[in-house]
Structures are given as C-alpha cells and as structure tokens.
Length: 163
Picture (cartoon, rainbow, N blue to C red):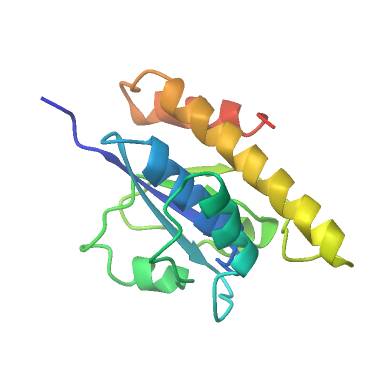
C-alpha cells in the first residue's frame, strides 16, 4: 500500500517558467510519491514558450500548463492541502503568507530565465534553469520517504544547494 502522496507547491514570481518547469519535472519523475502544483505572486498572462519547448525537448509532457495566482491555492485550502511550499524566487519567498496547515517551507532560488538582455542569453538561462531544477527534482525523488515533517524539511533544504 502506497502512503499518501506529498503535495508540493512551487512558488515563483510570474509562474511562466521556473514554477511550471518544477511542477512538470516533479509530475514527470515523482510517480505516485508527489503531486506537484505551481503558482506565482505576480503572474504573467501566459507560460513562456521557451518553457514549453524546454519541457518538450526533454520528453516531458508540455501541455495543460498555465500561470496560476498563489492566492487561488491560499483561499481554498480545503481543496488542496499543501504539504510543502518550495519558493523559487526571493520575491515569492518574501510574499508567501502563513499557509493553512503549516506546510514545510523551503527556498530553492533559481534565476529568472525570462529576464535577459538578448535572445541568446535567454536561451542559456532557460537551459541552466531547467538543468538546476531537474537536478534538484532528481535528488528529491532519489531520497527515501521521510518519516516526519522535520526530516522532509532537512531533505528539501539540503537539495537547495544542488545545481
């Protein structure tokens, strides 16, 4: 019998790149241990096309993603009980309110790939962002199932250093 999956909410600023990538990666590799979501503090109107291309190019289903406001999760805590909040930007970390249910909170900072001076620089930043998030997600799923919230928090915090 499988234990209840861990619900993970990735918070970024615009939810157009980092959060969507992290959500897609954990959905793809997390099997039945995790349920992944993403949201933003100041969402952009659409997912950046480079995000979807990056997912598709790496064999990850790129459809059905859209930017979501974190308040949609916050205001309806009964519909989705969040076990873990992973902030991916300093802004998301500072704006994330106290959450119902007191989920484990960790910070996995990643540079925003949408912010770049040139198209070539954006391409490089998207690749780097994807690689960092993929390495962190792989590290997470390779770890044994934690026996407590504190153990989970320590696992997640140690992963923040993985690049």
